[in-house]
Image (cartoon, rainbow, N blue to C red; front, side):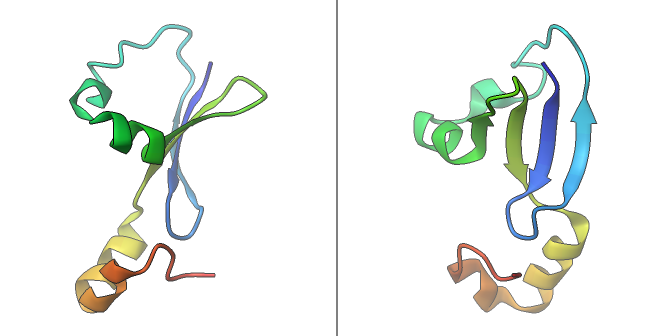
Length: 76
């Protein structure tokens, strides 16, 4: 069950954990509300768990252009 971190804006893979067993509290997922979990975590048909996050490049863009925070996606 790989856990794949992908940027919610550009779709770039940020990182991947290939552990068979993962304690979700060690990843901080237990700190998320139910709504945040629905928005950030998806379970793929191949068994992967995808977690939407933000890459450094998109974080820089958001810092330079704060109005982008209003958009769901700002890179196509």
